[in-house]
Image 1 (cartoon, rainbow, N blue to C red):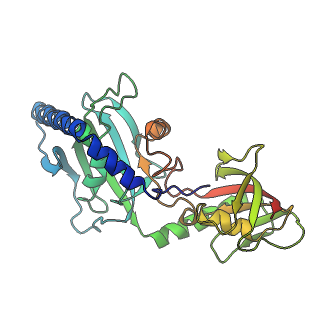
Image 2 (cartoon, helix red, strand yellow):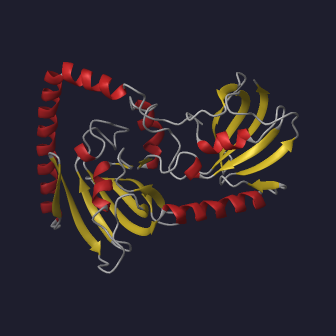
Image 3 (cartoon, rainbow, N blue to C red):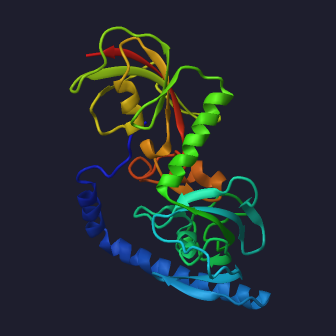
Length: 325
């Protein structure tokens, strides 16, 4: 349940490494520029062969292309930090579809956040051109997709991709909170949970075993055992046999977890239900969604920038407050 953030001094360390390796970086930039040129030529040849018209959009040294499949000029325009719900179909240039979400619950992400809300980044930028109700096709070069990453024979390195996208909805953070509160109520009802308190902080808490003594005070350290799950019951984290200790007023944990533990007593057991705005929020979205675990595992900043928790995930923690010191 940790927060993931840039640690103090990290940027200076990275800057120093970049300065030392400037020669290597220049060579890498040359390679990337050549790849960008190759990708652009490949996409242009593809468009010519398909007799498809598309508008070029520059992003750095890369060029991606957009084509309007369904216009809605009066629709709400997307803007930075909007929560965007989309249907999509993604394929490589040879036409092999590698992932799609075209019915049911749309995929959500927060548009154009500072850390990059969506991989592939070309799609994040492309959606900024769209309005609610519109459908676009984007032709995205490897430099704005997955670079040299490869997943299978159908998904080789330097893959140029084609993504059809429909903007289903545009939400505010407040609207997302309302949606998640409805999901929490459904979870409580479906699982027949009783005596669940809705706390002012925004979390829900069910005490299952009474504790003794007082709740932890600022400056005290607590030791807990926990199992973290998604609403569907899938476990994403657990303390195991080692338990977990932390100062109750630390800022290195998600707020919802701290708030839940702060109102427990020694020996108490309970269930903390935490909406995403008190957990990992908009997180970091990756499509195709099946690439997420592999890409995050191979990302050297995986423990600094983006945890594996998908965006807008409501979390459930079964917890026991073992000790207070």
